[in-house]
Image (cartoon, rainbow, N blue to C red):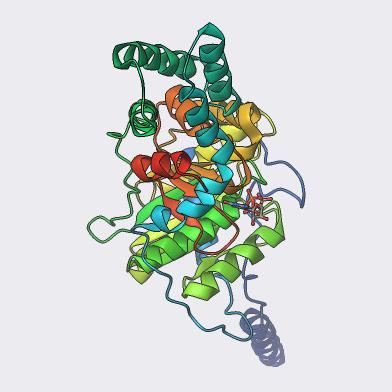
Length: 389
Ligand SMILES: Nc1nc2c(ncn2[C@@H]2O[C@H](COP(=O)(O)OP(=O)(O)OP(=O)(O)O)[C@@H](O)[C@H]2O)c(=O)[nH]1
Protein backbone atom coordinates (compact mmCIF):
# COMPACT_ATOMS: atom_id res chain seq x y z
CA UNK A 1 0.00 0.00 0.00
CA UNK A 2 2.83 2.35 1.02
CA UNK A 3 4.59 1.52 -2.23
CA UNK A 4 1.49 2.45 -4.21
CA UNK A 5 1.32 5.90 -2.54
CA UNK A 6 5.05 6.47 -3.18
CA UNK A 7 4.63 5.47 -6.84
CA UNK A 8 1.66 7.80 -7.28
CA UNK A 9 3.60 10.71 -5.72
CA UNK A 10 6.65 10.02 -8.00
CA UNK A 11 4.38 9.88 -11.07
CA UNK A 12 2.68 13.18 -10.14
CA UNK A 13 6.04 14.92 -9.59
CA UNK A 14 7.38 13.59 -12.91
CA UNK A 15 4.26 14.82 -14.69
CA UNK A 16 4.68 18.30 -13.25
CA UNK A 17 8.39 18.47 -14.11
CA UNK A 18 8.04 17.28 -17.73
CA UNK A 19 4.82 19.17 -18.37
CA UNK A 20 6.36 22.37 -17.08
CA UNK A 21 9.49 21.83 -19.11
CA UNK A 22 7.35 21.44 -22.26
CA UNK A 23 5.42 24.61 -21.52
CA UNK A 24 8.47 26.75 -20.91
CA UNK A 25 10.48 25.30 -23.81
CA UNK A 26 11.91 28.22 -25.77
CA UNK A 27 10.16 29.00 -29.07
CA UNK A 28 11.90 28.47 -32.37
CA UNK A 29 14.14 31.31 -33.23
CA UNK A 30 12.62 33.78 -35.71
CA UNK A 31 14.98 33.09 -38.55
CA UNK A 32 16.13 29.50 -38.32
CA UNK A 33 19.40 28.52 -39.91
CA UNK A 34 18.61 26.76 -43.13
CA UNK A 35 20.06 23.64 -44.52
CA UNK A 36 22.87 24.79 -46.74
CA UNK A 37 22.91 28.28 -45.21
CA UNK A 38 26.44 29.52 -45.49
CA UNK A 39 28.53 31.33 -42.97
CA UNK A 40 28.93 35.06 -43.29
CA UNK A 41 30.93 36.13 -46.28
CA UNK A 42 31.21 32.63 -47.72
CA UNK A 43 30.27 32.02 -51.32
CA UNK A 44 27.06 30.07 -51.78
CA UNK A 45 27.67 26.38 -52.24
CA UNK A 46 27.51 25.22 -55.79
CA UNK A 47 27.22 21.60 -54.81
CA UNK A 48 25.13 21.54 -51.67
CA UNK A 49 21.94 22.57 -53.39
CA UNK A 50 19.01 20.56 -52.05
CA UNK A 51 16.69 18.62 -54.31
CA UNK A 52 13.68 20.52 -55.67
CA UNK A 53 11.23 19.36 -53.00
CA UNK A 54 13.74 19.95 -50.28
CA UNK A 55 14.20 23.45 -51.69
CA UNK A 56 10.48 24.09 -51.45
CA UNK A 57 10.34 22.66 -47.96
CA UNK A 58 13.32 24.72 -46.89
CA UNK A 59 11.80 27.81 -48.42
CA UNK A 60 8.40 27.14 -46.85
CA UNK A 61 10.12 26.51 -43.55
CA UNK A 62 11.94 29.77 -43.98
CA UNK A 63 8.61 31.47 -44.62
CA UNK A 64 7.24 30.15 -41.34
CA UNK A 65 10.14 31.77 -39.54
CA UNK A 66 10.49 34.69 -41.90
CA UNK A 67 11.31 38.02 -40.49
CA UNK A 68 9.99 40.60 -42.88
CA UNK A 69 11.75 43.86 -42.45
CA UNK A 70 10.82 45.59 -39.28
CA UNK A 71 9.41 49.03 -39.67
CA UNK A 72 12.13 51.64 -39.47
CA UNK A 73 12.18 53.32 -36.07
CA UNK A 74 10.82 56.63 -37.27
CA UNK A 75 8.65 55.99 -40.29
CA UNK A 76 9.58 58.53 -42.93
CA UNK A 77 6.90 60.28 -44.85
CA UNK A 78 5.71 58.17 -47.77
CA UNK A 79 6.42 59.89 -51.06
CA UNK A 80 4.37 59.77 -54.23
CA UNK A 81 6.85 59.46 -57.10
CA UNK A 82 5.94 60.88 -60.49
CA UNK A 83 4.61 58.48 -63.15
CA UNK A 84 7.17 56.97 -65.50
CA UNK A 85 5.68 58.27 -68.76
CA UNK A 86 7.88 60.83 -70.50
CA UNK A 87 10.75 60.50 -68.08
CA UNK A 88 13.35 60.17 -70.81
CA UNK A 89 12.11 63.42 -72.27
CA UNK A 90 12.47 65.02 -68.84
CA UNK A 91 16.01 63.66 -68.59
CA UNK A 92 16.81 64.61 -72.16
CA UNK A 93 19.17 67.44 -71.22
CA UNK A 94 21.25 65.06 -69.15
CA UNK A 95 21.39 62.59 -72.00
CA UNK A 96 22.26 65.31 -74.50
CA UNK A 97 25.07 66.48 -72.24
CA UNK A 98 26.65 63.07 -71.76
CA UNK A 99 26.29 62.01 -75.40
CA UNK A 100 27.34 65.37 -76.83
CA UNK A 101 30.72 64.18 -78.10
CA UNK A 102 29.12 61.19 -79.79
CA UNK A 103 26.14 62.91 -81.43
CA UNK A 104 27.66 66.28 -82.26
CA UNK A 105 30.92 64.66 -83.33
CA UNK A 106 29.10 62.54 -85.89
CA UNK A 107 26.99 65.41 -87.13
CA UNK A 108 29.98 67.67 -87.72
CA UNK A 109 31.93 64.92 -89.50
CA UNK A 110 28.97 64.19 -91.75
CA UNK A 111 28.46 67.86 -92.53
CA UNK A 112 31.90 68.25 -94.12
CA UNK A 113 31.80 69.48 -97.72
CA UNK A 114 33.76 66.55 -99.00
CA UNK A 115 33.48 63.05 -97.56
CA UNK A 116 36.43 60.90 -98.64
CA UNK A 117 37.58 57.48 -97.40
CA UNK A 118 39.39 59.05 -94.45
CA UNK A 119 36.24 60.91 -93.42
CA UNK A 120 34.21 57.71 -93.51
CA UNK A 121 36.87 55.93 -91.52
CA UNK A 122 36.73 58.68 -88.95
CA UNK A 123 32.95 58.39 -88.77
CA UNK A 124 33.27 54.64 -88.25
CA UNK A 125 35.89 55.18 -85.53
CA UNK A 126 33.61 57.67 -83.76
CA UNK A 127 30.85 55.08 -83.75
CA UNK A 128 33.17 52.38 -82.44
CA UNK A 129 34.56 54.70 -79.76
CA UNK A 130 30.99 55.26 -78.59
CA UNK A 131 30.66 51.46 -78.16
CA UNK A 132 28.24 50.98 -81.03
CA UNK A 133 30.13 47.81 -81.98
CA UNK A 134 32.04 47.04 -85.16
CA UNK A 135 29.22 45.30 -87.04
CA UNK A 136 26.68 48.05 -86.44
CA UNK A 137 29.28 50.76 -87.11
CA UNK A 138 30.12 49.22 -90.49
CA UNK A 139 26.42 48.92 -91.37
CA UNK A 140 25.70 52.52 -90.42
CA UNK A 141 28.65 53.81 -92.46
CA UNK A 142 27.75 51.72 -95.50
CA UNK A 143 24.16 52.88 -95.48
CA UNK A 144 25.13 56.53 -94.92
CA UNK A 145 27.68 56.40 -97.74
CA UNK A 146 25.05 55.22 -100.18
CA UNK A 147 22.51 57.80 -99.08
CA UNK A 148 25.01 60.69 -99.08
CA UNK A 149 26.09 59.75 -102.62
CA UNK A 150 22.49 59.93 -103.79
CA UNK A 151 21.85 63.18 -101.96
CA UNK A 152 24.93 65.08 -103.13
CA UNK A 153 25.08 68.33 -101.17
CA UNK A 154 23.59 68.10 -97.71
CA UNK A 155 21.86 70.62 -95.50
CA UNK A 156 22.35 70.24 -91.71
CA UNK A 157 18.71 69.07 -91.44
CA UNK A 158 19.29 66.41 -94.06
CA UNK A 159 22.45 65.18 -92.32
CA UNK A 160 20.61 65.01 -89.03
CA UNK A 161 17.72 63.19 -90.67
CA UNK A 162 20.01 60.60 -92.26
CA UNK A 163 21.86 59.90 -89.05
CA UNK A 164 18.65 59.78 -87.05
CA UNK A 165 17.21 57.14 -89.38
CA UNK A 166 20.36 54.99 -89.22
CA UNK A 167 20.76 55.13 -85.44
CA UNK A 168 17.09 54.45 -84.91
CA UNK A 169 17.18 51.46 -87.23
CA UNK A 170 20.10 50.02 -85.26
CA UNK A 171 18.20 50.50 -82.00
CA UNK A 172 15.44 48.27 -83.28
CA UNK A 173 12.52 50.48 -82.22
CA UNK A 174 9.99 47.69 -82.72
CA UNK A 175 11.30 45.58 -79.83
CA UNK A 176 8.80 45.16 -77.01
CA UNK A 177 10.20 47.17 -74.11
CA UNK A 178 7.28 46.78 -71.77
CA UNK A 179 8.37 45.90 -68.25
CA UNK A 180 5.91 43.16 -67.33
CA UNK A 181 4.42 44.35 -64.09
CA UNK A 182 0.81 43.28 -64.46
CA UNK A 183 -0.04 40.70 -61.84
CA UNK A 184 -1.89 37.59 -62.94
CA UNK A 185 -5.05 36.14 -61.39
CA UNK A 186 -4.30 36.77 -57.75
CA UNK A 187 -0.52 36.51 -57.91
CA UNK A 188 1.85 39.42 -58.33
CA UNK A 189 4.23 39.77 -61.24
CA UNK A 190 7.74 38.85 -60.18
CA UNK A 191 10.80 40.73 -61.38
CA UNK A 192 14.30 39.47 -60.68
CA UNK A 193 17.04 42.08 -60.84
CA UNK A 194 20.40 40.48 -61.64
CA UNK A 195 23.87 41.78 -62.31
CA UNK A 196 27.33 42.24 -60.93
CA UNK A 197 27.69 44.25 -57.74
CA UNK A 198 28.41 47.90 -58.26
CA UNK A 199 26.46 48.12 -61.50
CA UNK A 200 23.56 49.74 -59.65
CA UNK A 201 21.42 46.68 -58.99
CA UNK A 202 20.10 47.69 -55.58
CA UNK A 203 19.64 51.28 -56.63
CA UNK A 204 17.78 50.10 -59.72
CA UNK A 205 15.52 47.84 -57.62
CA UNK A 206 14.68 50.82 -55.43
CA UNK A 207 14.16 53.17 -58.34
CA UNK A 208 12.04 50.60 -60.13
CA UNK A 209 9.83 50.32 -57.06
CA UNK A 210 9.36 54.08 -57.31
CA UNK A 211 8.54 53.83 -61.02
CA UNK A 212 5.87 51.22 -60.28
CA UNK A 213 4.44 53.03 -57.27
CA UNK A 214 4.40 56.22 -59.34
CA UNK A 215 2.41 54.31 -61.96
CA UNK A 216 -0.11 53.28 -59.30
CA UNK A 217 1.09 49.75 -58.49
CA UNK A 218 1.76 48.18 -55.11
CA UNK A 219 5.18 46.63 -54.66
CA UNK A 220 7.03 44.26 -52.31
CA UNK A 221 10.84 44.30 -52.38
CA UNK A 222 12.97 41.24 -51.66
CA UNK A 223 16.54 41.80 -50.46
CA UNK A 224 18.00 38.59 -51.83
CA UNK A 225 21.47 40.10 -52.14
CA UNK A 226 22.47 38.69 -48.79
CA UNK A 227 26.22 39.15 -49.19
CA UNK A 228 26.12 42.64 -47.83
CA UNK A 229 23.79 43.71 -45.03
CA UNK A 230 24.17 47.26 -46.33
CA UNK A 231 22.45 46.24 -49.57
CA UNK A 232 19.34 45.21 -47.60
CA UNK A 233 19.54 48.40 -45.53
CA UNK A 234 19.77 50.39 -48.75
CA UNK A 235 16.72 48.61 -50.16
CA UNK A 236 14.82 49.18 -46.94
CA UNK A 237 15.42 52.90 -47.24
CA UNK A 238 14.12 52.88 -50.82
CA UNK A 239 11.08 50.83 -49.79
CA UNK A 240 10.25 53.00 -46.78
CA UNK A 241 10.20 56.12 -48.93
CA UNK A 242 7.39 54.78 -51.09
CA UNK A 243 5.69 52.57 -48.51
CA UNK A 244 6.84 49.30 -50.10
CA UNK A 245 7.55 46.50 -47.60
CA UNK A 246 10.99 44.93 -47.80
CA UNK A 247 11.58 41.27 -46.98
CA UNK A 248 15.10 40.61 -45.76
CA UNK A 249 17.12 38.19 -43.68
CA UNK A 250 20.46 38.11 -42.01
CA UNK A 251 23.63 38.63 -44.00
CA UNK A 252 24.72 35.33 -45.54
CA UNK A 253 21.19 33.84 -45.53
CA UNK A 254 20.04 31.76 -48.48
CA UNK A 255 19.02 34.21 -51.27
CA UNK A 256 16.42 31.72 -52.54
CA UNK A 257 14.57 31.66 -49.22
CA UNK A 258 14.49 35.47 -49.10
CA UNK A 259 13.08 35.50 -52.64
CA UNK A 260 10.48 32.89 -51.68
CA UNK A 261 9.46 34.88 -48.62
CA UNK A 262 9.18 38.06 -50.63
CA UNK A 263 6.92 36.42 -53.20
CA UNK A 264 4.84 34.86 -50.40
CA UNK A 265 4.49 38.29 -48.85
CA UNK A 266 3.49 39.73 -52.23
CA UNK A 267 0.81 37.05 -52.63
CA UNK A 268 -0.46 37.53 -49.07
CA UNK A 269 -0.59 41.31 -49.46
CA UNK A 270 -2.25 41.11 -52.88
CA UNK A 271 0.62 43.22 -54.27
CA UNK A 272 0.88 43.93 -57.99
CA UNK A 273 4.61 43.28 -58.24
CA UNK A 274 7.50 41.78 -56.33
CA UNK A 275 11.00 43.00 -57.12
CA UNK A 276 13.84 40.71 -56.09
CA UNK A 277 17.32 42.21 -55.80
CA UNK A 278 19.43 39.10 -56.27
CA UNK A 279 22.86 38.11 -55.09
CA UNK A 280 24.26 37.25 -58.51
CA UNK A 281 27.97 37.55 -57.99
CA UNK A 282 30.22 36.72 -60.86
CA UNK A 283 32.37 34.32 -58.83
CA UNK A 284 32.26 31.40 -61.21
CA UNK A 285 29.82 30.71 -63.96
CA UNK A 286 28.77 27.45 -62.29
CA UNK A 287 28.29 29.16 -58.93
CA UNK A 288 26.28 31.94 -60.52
CA UNK A 289 24.19 29.49 -62.49
CA UNK A 290 23.46 27.44 -59.38
CA UNK A 291 22.57 30.45 -57.31
CA UNK A 292 20.36 32.30 -59.78
CA UNK A 293 18.86 29.03 -61.01
CA UNK A 294 17.94 28.08 -57.48
CA UNK A 295 16.42 31.49 -56.73
CA UNK A 296 14.31 31.23 -59.88
CA UNK A 297 13.21 27.65 -59.24
CA UNK A 298 12.24 28.38 -55.66
CA UNK A 299 10.23 31.47 -56.71
CA UNK A 300 8.47 29.33 -59.29
CA UNK A 301 7.05 27.14 -56.51
CA UNK A 302 4.90 30.17 -55.75
CA UNK A 303 4.61 32.19 -58.95
CA UNK A 304 6.05 32.56 -62.41
CA UNK A 305 8.99 34.89 -62.95
CA UNK A 306 7.85 37.60 -65.35
CA UNK A 307 11.03 39.55 -65.85
CA UNK A 308 14.73 38.93 -65.38
CA UNK A 309 16.28 42.37 -65.67
CA UNK A 310 20.03 42.47 -66.18
CA UNK A 311 21.63 45.62 -64.81
CA UNK A 312 24.69 46.81 -66.74
CA UNK A 313 26.90 49.78 -66.02
CA UNK A 314 27.21 51.76 -69.27
CA UNK A 315 30.59 53.11 -68.24
CA UNK A 316 32.20 49.65 -68.22
CA UNK A 317 32.03 49.15 -72.00
CA UNK A 318 33.38 45.82 -73.22
CA UNK A 319 33.71 44.52 -69.69
CA UNK A 320 30.00 45.11 -69.14
CA UNK A 321 29.29 43.32 -72.35
CA UNK A 322 31.29 40.29 -71.21
CA UNK A 323 29.28 40.22 -67.99
CA UNK A 324 26.09 40.46 -70.00
CA UNK A 325 27.07 37.42 -72.05
CA UNK A 326 27.75 35.32 -68.95
CA UNK A 327 24.46 36.29 -67.33
CA UNK A 328 22.47 35.63 -70.46
CA UNK A 329 23.98 32.15 -70.67
CA UNK A 330 22.97 31.50 -67.08
CA UNK A 331 19.46 32.96 -66.89
CA UNK A 332 16.85 33.87 -69.43
CA UNK A 333 17.36 37.63 -69.39
CA UNK A 334 14.19 39.39 -70.57
CA UNK A 335 15.36 42.98 -70.41
CA UNK A 336 18.40 45.15 -69.82
CA UNK A 337 18.71 48.12 -67.51
CA UNK A 338 21.61 50.30 -68.57
CA UNK A 339 22.74 52.45 -65.67
CA UNK A 340 25.07 55.46 -65.43
CA UNK A 341 24.39 56.64 -68.97
CA UNK A 342 24.80 60.13 -67.53
CA UNK A 343 28.45 59.36 -66.86
CA UNK A 344 29.63 58.23 -70.29
CA UNK A 345 29.64 59.36 -73.90
CA UNK A 346 29.48 55.72 -74.94
CA UNK A 347 25.72 55.55 -75.40
CA UNK A 348 26.29 53.32 -78.42
CA UNK A 349 26.54 50.42 -75.98
CA UNK A 350 22.73 50.20 -76.19
CA UNK A 351 23.00 49.20 -79.84
CA UNK A 352 25.75 46.68 -79.19
CA UNK A 353 24.23 45.03 -76.15
CA UNK A 354 20.86 44.59 -77.84
CA UNK A 355 22.50 43.15 -80.94
CA UNK A 356 24.72 40.77 -78.96
CA UNK A 357 22.06 39.54 -76.57
CA UNK A 358 18.94 39.91 -78.67
CA UNK A 359 17.29 41.39 -75.59
CA UNK A 360 15.80 44.91 -75.45
CA UNK A 361 17.11 47.67 -73.24
CA UNK A 362 14.00 48.44 -71.21
CA UNK A 363 15.21 51.03 -68.73
CA UNK A 364 18.08 53.48 -68.50
CA UNK A 365 19.65 55.10 -65.46
CA UNK A 366 20.55 58.73 -65.89
CA UNK A 367 21.66 59.83 -62.48
CA UNK A 368 21.74 59.14 -58.79
CA UNK A 369 18.45 60.89 -58.06
CA UNK A 370 15.54 58.69 -57.00
CA UNK A 371 13.57 59.35 -60.18
CA UNK A 372 16.47 59.16 -62.60
CA UNK A 373 15.45 55.78 -63.99
CA UNK A 374 13.46 56.04 -67.21
CA UNK A 375 11.74 53.63 -69.59
CA UNK A 376 13.94 53.50 -72.67
CA UNK A 377 12.47 55.21 -75.71
CA UNK A 378 14.65 54.89 -78.85
CA UNK A 379 13.28 58.03 -80.52
CA UNK A 380 13.72 60.25 -77.47
CA UNK A 381 17.21 58.79 -77.05
CA UNK A 382 18.33 59.49 -80.63
CA UNK A 383 16.82 62.97 -80.58
CA UNK A 384 18.61 63.76 -77.33
CA UNK A 385 22.01 62.64 -78.56
CA UNK A 386 21.67 64.55 -81.85
CA UNK A 387 20.63 67.78 -80.17
CA UNK A 388 23.33 70.08 -78.89
CA UNK A 389 23.51 70.05 -75.11
N1 LIG B 1 25.48 58.48 -61.98
C1 LIG B 1 24.74 57.40 -61.78
N2 LIG B 1 24.99 56.62 -60.71
C2 LIG B 1 24.23 55.52 -60.54
C3 LIG B 1 23.20 55.15 -61.44
N3 LIG B 1 22.66 53.99 -61.00
C4 LIG B 1 23.32 53.65 -59.87
N4 LIG B 1 24.27 54.57 -59.57
C5 LIG B 1 25.21 54.57 -58.45
O1 LIG B 1 26.03 53.42 -58.52
C6 LIG B 1 26.47 53.06 -57.21
C7 LIG B 1 26.31 51.58 -56.99
O2 LIG B 1 24.94 51.29 -56.93
P1 LIG B 1 24.36 50.04 -56.11
O3 LIG B 1 22.90 50.03 -56.37
O4 LIG B 1 24.81 50.05 -54.70
O5 LIG B 1 25.06 48.84 -56.87
P2 LIG B 1 24.79 47.30 -56.67
O6 LIG B 1 24.96 46.69 -58.01
O7 LIG B 1 23.51 47.02 -55.99
O8 LIG B 1 25.98 46.89 -55.74
P3 LIG B 1 25.95 45.86 -54.51
O9 LIG B 1 24.85 46.30 -53.59
O10 LIG B 1 27.31 46.01 -53.91
O11 LIG B 1 25.69 44.54 -55.13
C8 LIG B 1 25.65 53.94 -56.27
O12 LIG B 1 26.46 55.00 -55.81
C9 LIG B 1 24.53 54.47 -57.13
O13 LIG B 1 24.04 55.71 -56.71
C10 LIG B 1 22.97 56.00 -62.58
O14 LIG B 1 22.13 55.75 -63.44
N5 LIG B 1 23.78 57.10 -62.69
